[in-house]
Image (cartoon, rainbow, N blue to C red; front, side, top):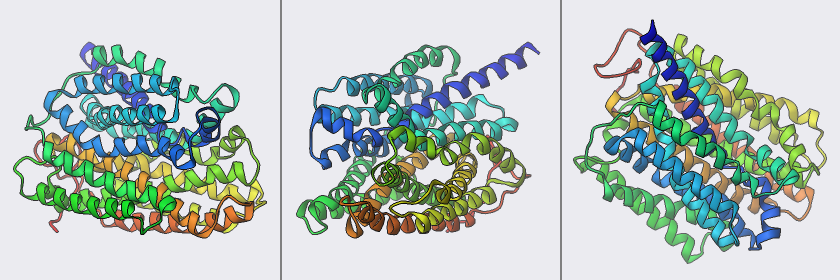
Length: 476
């Protein structure tokens, strides 16, 4: 009994530690959005400089995620989790004390590197600590916390900015990070992956390719699509990513083995994740501004009115985890994506320069349910689509694609917004917001279609070495 109690205690501590770490990393994706006016007032800078306070974090987070997972597999997941947490915490303090906009952007970029090391290891550490029979519920709680962090970023950032100062959106991470460091050292068990050599060429190709594409998309509203810098970024980034795919096919120990994509399960859930975050991030980015700039709510008021969306994961995601254990993750994830798409479509149909909150509420609730149904089963599908020794690679790849989706979502939907509308008046904002939301709804619906391509679970089938039920895979 004492040994069982110790295992249960270890699983609880692992869930707490990994959930808090995941919350911090996910929160900082959008926490800055509602603080941008205050940051500009204090630090100066043009609008495109302020945009980089969001994208610098998202970009470094995305391009170093797979490398962070590989470092954990090679040198120890607990050890690298502690290092990543320390880097993230120190960079948060540097961002809070930044004397100018350039130093703030630099601190945000370092924050992203710390999060990229820390975040993919949360799921592998949690999987190692929790018994297979309990992982559905654990993934559900982990997913609920991370989903809440992503969606509540505007609320937390707006409340701290309005009632204290914008610096506190970064100071918030410091005591949490300091508390996690000794807990992780004492309560998490060390584990390793394959121990293969680090894939430096693959990391450089992926990092350069993603940077080029995201840079081109972010700069296109400012410089224009025909700008030499924008075209260079897009074409060079595409070429580097093509080189990364070639490298993953032909290299002996690539960072992301392309053979994993022969699995319909792995391909389907990763495509769905990228498209889900593309539609969701871009929508939250624009809707938080719509509620403040057009409807006249304060940052805190806007965040509170989004609670039917942001708070829903805490209520529904644990249930989604249980459902995925019973009927499989595929139908739950697909249903969640179609709910999210329907919610965004509803919002696109009702947003006006003077829309009532009652008209928006059904769309917010539907979106919240959809997001909650997606998070927990998606994590389980990723981890169960590969063998145990490949879970670090799978987790890093999935998280990287989510972040890439988020960066693309903000860039693409901001471009659509700029082409159709602007900030000149409430109606001009709505003119740009509506087509952007329609695009977001269509992209998330396409993610639902991708989820339906995931094979049904075979409960009795297990692959040797797998730590969870493995999905039937079909070679492409």
